[in-house]
Length: 402
Image (cartoon, rainbow, N blue to C red):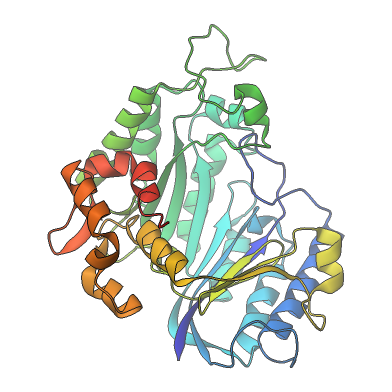
């Protein structure tokens, strides 16, 4: 059987954060239940219990990871998440491997111990808590709906509910944030000893309130403003780089290893689902706007809620749109783009097995140039250097084929 990752998108949240460009929005409980029913219909139709409209090939799959993300999946009413997981297990096309990784994203303040215990009984074995900061003023400026106390309470209840595989998301380079502020955030989170920490820099995305505030560019100028109605300046590039570098050294001392550009784990606690993306494992997405890739064919679901509720599980194309078969060139590019995000990099044998040629035959000139610039090292495997990770966007662009 072929391994498969499954992503389920829950687009609901309590309130949209000021930096968020994800497909998410508040909704009434009635709408949330209607969405869950549509999800169940989509899962049933795609998984082979209906004979038309499915995109998956006629192959049996062994699901080794399920990731329920959003939005904020933990805002779903009681019992909804359990019903979604039950639908996945009942699908005749999906067999679940003996020890799958099943992750649910939660936000502090939207779960309690009772709900967490129900998740665990339903088979969830990994919780990802999105806190972003443990400083109240930073949380308020980001537009988060929780407090620092909410985060620590949620973390404690997650442990009490029996979860040992816990991720915490935090952000660096927040408006008004100093290096000391960020390191205090990191220290407090690491002090809880979660199995996994995702540490990302804030990106100002078009279409967000922060984009309107900062004009789409990093706001480096000094400002006497505060969060009380004024724009706080973003950290300088040097400050952001220092946060980035100190994250790696600090977490290494705490026993974490960096296995991807922004992800750190205790031994054996890497996120299996996300590693599947970076190694180009097949995956299927269910829900509004969810993306999939199987056999080098990509597709994406509709992003309009009314259309999704109406078409999920119907005959024909249903909710699937933007179906694209990747060319051999695009597959090679992705292999490099994604594989180089991992600290272990890529193996020459892996490239040869995937494409039938040595990587030097395709990328020899580029590899030589990047090695000479100190951005790559090629001792056995091909991986980014520390400097290469600092300018990874430039490195990845070099692997675009004409």
